[in-house]
Image (cartoon, rainbow, N blue to C red; front, side, top):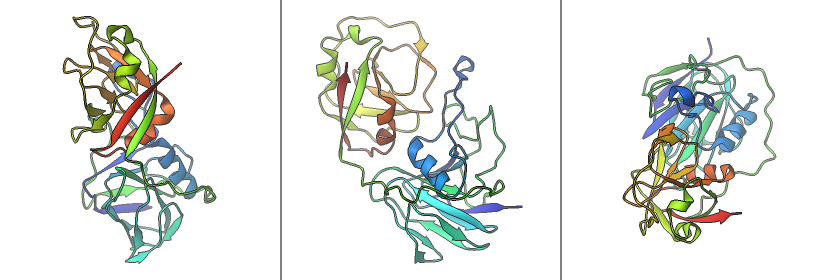
Length: 283
């Protein structure tokens, strides 16, 4: 049986694939990797289908031991990767023989890196996905030292080495936003959103919490609960917006002033506390 063992999970490590969309009617969010392009690339580098499950490591510090011969790759922000103490680099396929240790150093920038293993992490799926959903608790438990994860059969040929490694995440992000559906609850919504916001330490996979000048409303009261999608910018009574990420609740009663363009979500997934965010309204 092909396996990989978690020696050290770092601050937090989760099994994630591309998620379980289509279950909002059950109250289940889509979940899945927050930096989808990084997971897709890691899977290509080891010869997997892009949707195979890998490990999402928060802030690095992940150490694994190969239980059998396998190919691995680490993607996301640039990070030091070593095999048995020998540096091998990120964003490149690396072969491990049984017993070898792969160490991912703590991240100096960004938040999340991704480890893919040939064959994919083959834990039991729930609702069609192997992703951990931190809001509902669906999916495999957060990874702990000593956990042994089964791997699928390695089949594909590694690809994607011609792609450039990710650049260091910027300290300020300009994020495109589509206003609505409740932008009419706010005077000059585009102008209010365009001011600088700061990512707070309370952010997680559910939502990116921002600090700044509270958004002013044009009307009072609250809404009946409405459906929410990934990227929705919800404004609670404090006026401080929350950008919902993959593990977001499926309904909410606070107004949504706008929705982040899907292509900007991976950058938000890598935004550390203290990062400046500016929203730019799109036509």
